[in-house]
Length: 495
Image (cartoon, rainbow, N blue to C red):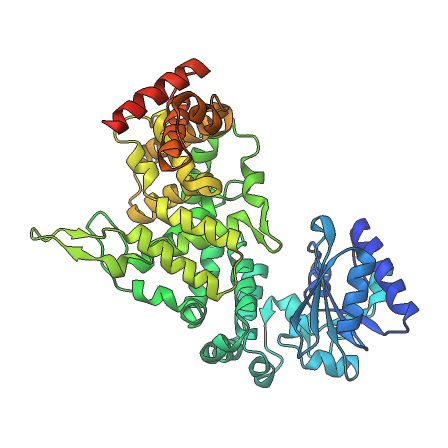
């Protein structure tokens, strides 16, 4: 028997699951990533369970018992997921139609083709079922396919292999690399939401750029994000170190450093992190902000990195030259936002996720434009957050990454510090002076209709916005001043 460490809260959940299946006389085995991570003494949060029974019916009953949400990930294969309440993780159930050994042999990678009785896992002492040599590959740090047929069986498996290798810091065995590369041609056959989930899990990793580079090397990046291909080889003005594609990858590299929970080990990334978070020392909730989930499976930092990858996809379609030969990309932010929105709709992102990314792309140049040789005014900051909404803070970090992706290895520390100072100033107004971005109401629409004899409509909205903007800028602070300003603007509008 092999001892494994299981967190107390996980032990309680495992005990409940064991009882649930025993009452129904269902044989249940822990498999896949949970068991793999437990054997590696890594935090093991999401459960994979193979059941000798109707996984769809069992999944619905289990979701009801645990107060979770039931999702059929692949109804044809009987692959279901229960999302536990209060961020408690997920439980994936798959049906076992043969012996557990045969079931495991049909898994994709040897290190995930491991099993143990669920009751034994709950007790913390297991007999590992290992028909493909997965324990040896765990010890060697290798991702190895169980067979070429196993990778062909599910078109998502090549993408999973890269994600697992990056997640664990493992090498992909040579023949498996070839199988993965061949599988790129079939990735589009996988359900879009499954492609999305694997991509976002990779982007949530501390070194997402490493995973993206490996995806690109194996031909998988073009398969999951074909929209990126138009950016390859698109030259930019001389101040840019990379072409558009290289710049996009470099922006993700920068975000890996800037959004890390602690200073990265390598010298350049570590200094970037210290320069930024030293200036933001006052922002107590900064790191937690980027850890918070935007959807059930997507932390905010992963969505920001996705936006770093996509923020310039509108450049190829908008590239023009002036008579002087100067290269321009007029409207690339709006064009790119529309392209990203279509891409994210294709991959079944939520409306909220699409809105955040589209607003970020639309506004990613604004932080620099707001700070031409001086700190942004309160009026400019108000307008920025009015335009970006929930995406405002994220857009500021994207702006920093855009700058770093532009200069590449030729970073000017004085220039970066100046950019950080602008971001810190805007964030300070956002979090420490809420009257700038969310001024309290001085007058309502009803007030203006009554006092100025107005009807509902665009003019009324324009006057209310003028009042809020002046209030945010510190020009007015009382109801009387607000009414006076509204009368003045009304007179101007009526000519």
